[in-house]
Length: 191
Image (tube, helix red, strand yellow):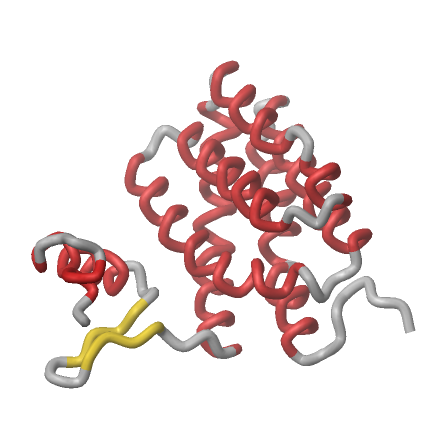
């Protein structure tokens, strides 16, 4: 049964959705062969991280220069309660809170093109981050989420250099945290 028929939709909305997923790098479409979920290997993770770090650094810098009170409140709201989500192991909610934070930060940068890049790159990064959360210590996850507070504090102080450094610390460690889990040695694990 086709996806369009199963969803009781016409073929056009399904085709457009698949095209959007392909543009975001989440699926690959091969003529006369089908549509497949994109690979999630270490090489893809490396590419995502290499691209994401300078973009997010720039976003943090711009947000520190341009953020208004409402932007800062939106970021603060996104991070509210994340420790409770970690304690309760509500990782899907944690991922959503993380996404809200990064999108609010990008919005505060007041540059729609940067926002689009953050949406795409964050979507790709989540594919690696979410499945690894259950294999990490809660302390390690808490430490990672605390790094977001450093970014927020620098944005609140309108300090672009500090915001950029804080973001590089946050995003720069992402590759290491995820690869350690994928290789079987979760960060923060006790021997």
